[in-house]
Image 1 (cartoon, rainbow, N blue to C red):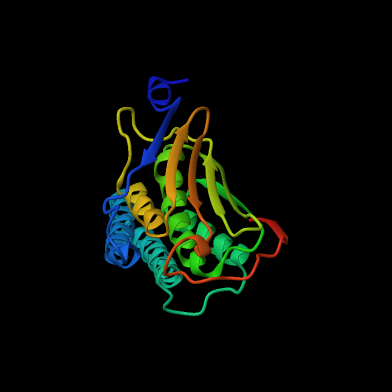
Image 2: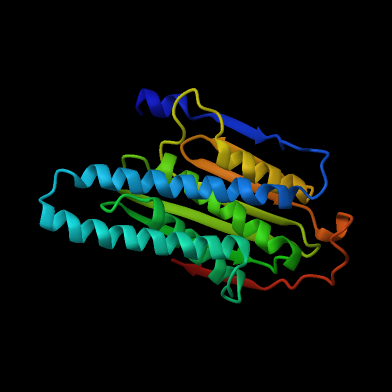
Length: 241
């Protein structure tokens, strides 16, 4: 194990919300998350342009335009899924898979082969679904940018589980190198922490031989303002992307 990897393992981090007592926190996170998402895309685009400078002009032009177009379209699709601008696939399994795979394709190197394995157990309460999707965007984005940094490929596992009472847990795992040594959390995890707090939940990050990001949310029935909901189905959906 390298010194970089050794410095980033064996630690667990709990993400403290930025506004623990503030109501309507999810709405306050909207523009912060949009800005963070846009920043990630622009960083990726700038890097692509830098890497293309050494190519011959005719090859560079066609390749660069095609790649920029692909990443811009992916960015638009992810923004739609995050902020509900267009219709999303019906099931949470499809939505999580689309979000995970789209984020990987957007942020990964062209030469990387990164897979997403997505599974869903139980019926995530409707009031929590948008929040879960937004947390997946941050967790998977961090796994690509940090965990899979300088690697040829790997697998990111995404698991969403809801118990019969409506309590919901999201776990995103990767076997990459994690954050740089000495770095604790980034803006993406802070956003996820604030989103979790808006629903009375928590976010944690554990680093051992792999990195595990966890979002835990109580049943919406336990938080004032979400309203009541009938018992959740115990159905299980699984699919590998």
